[in-house]
Image 1 (cartoon, rainbow, N blue to C red):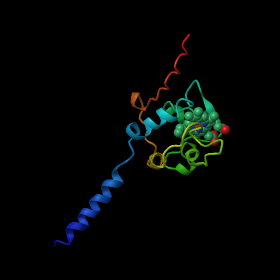
Image 2: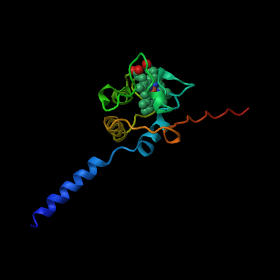
Image 3: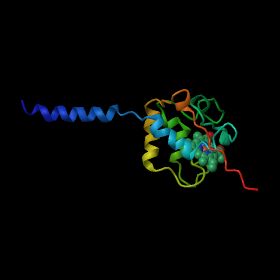
Image 4: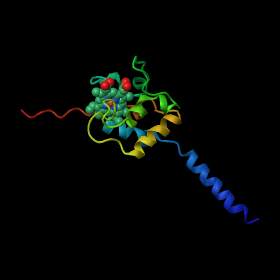
Length: 134
Ligand code: HEC
């Protein structure tokens, strides 16, 4: 019966990685907070995209949906990260691209349904620009 053991182990490992759903607060929120929300908030609504909360991100816009839960291939949030850097819709619009691992995490997150909690956990506040001295 010893043959049975490795099969079980392999199966449980597979299951463990399948079950590890992307955690919005730990894996997605920091990316939006550091790299996106400065340009995509209620005051600076570049491209008509607001990433301060799920409700705002899901608002209908004539340019097409920012996030289509379960369909990364139709979600501009993901697609703009995959555009060639010279494309003027490639995001983030300035500074370095996101690491490939983050882009893949975003893809998985949307594929899994783009879970984004309500309330404080889901709220992303843009940092206030530093006031100029004088
Ligand atoms: C420096 C400012 C800036 C940053 C940072 C930034 N964006 Fe944008 N974003 C823009 C501008 C400007 C547009 C409008 C581009 C256009 O339509 O030509 C835009 C448009 C978009 C669009 C809409 C594209 C479309 O086709 O309608 C999405 C989605 C988007 N950004 C997502 C993101 C994400 C996700 C991040 C972070 C990874 C991010 N942006 C970071 C400035 C920024």
